[in-house]
Length: 424
Image (cartoon, rainbow, N blue to C red; front, side, top):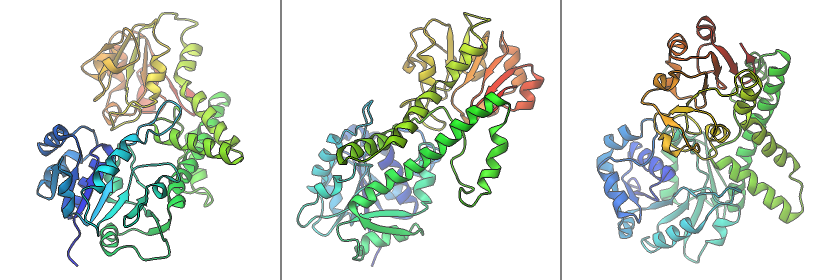
């Protein structure tokens, strides 16, 4: 058969990156969104999200990408993914209204033989509840990681597919598309696939919770977590790819959603989710590391420090600030003078009444008593600690992710605090 034509509906983070990856793999790709203005901007190369390599690959594959708000354009497609980002509220509940509306619209533009795939993250039971007679409906676990979206879309570790009858072969067009990515394909019932995504994230959270808990012990007893990690990764029961870097709590929204989903399901069926609730509590505790360190190490001697904050996004290479540790820190700093810088997030978005923006990272450091590097952006790793020390008035550096070189910081006279190692 000739190569199938692929459709993606919902040009938010997930849908846009997945569509560009499909085109990069050589597939003619129809990109549908009801927002005509958004489609017009995308067609001109104006992208609403920040991701490494996304803009370059969109330009490279422009001839294979059609951006349209006409749902009838999907009739050319053999496989159509519904892939909008699904927003969550402060309690980790998914707002499914948008994806349901998009599913309804897309069904009106499908050929009878087309395959419809839900790619967005949805709670267990969602896909089966949307099955209709004559609808070739599947669910596929998305692999999105903010800041690595194109990489993950082009080079997936495996595909997890939820099917109405998992013992049957996948439709030819769907199979041909998945085969183009040269990875294992695991087919299972809808609910198993929906829960598989949650299971993966729970394993990640458990590893991060171990790292955060023991890294804090390291800070208190003079040990160094980064010295311990290689021993763990050489243990086959843990593995070299384990998430063992300590952080400032879970952020971004997706992991929080999955933990909340597990707690709600456990409550409904009378099961125990105490360990998940402990992970949530651990995350909330660890998110306050920067503020606790400031309270302990600075405020007793300097009650009114000027503070520089580098990084507002919840992680590098993304514009998202959902549950950002930097924002959590800034909420404590209302009475202090703050100057902040982030490569993509405007300072106006920060939850601080008097935060001032800076044009560069080094400019944000000018006159500061304390510098907090709250997002490990690549450009921050290139900063010269000697130049930072020269610009600052004080010498306290909160560098939780160890972005700056330890030896260079010591030579510059900076008192550096990092996760898992304490002060140096």
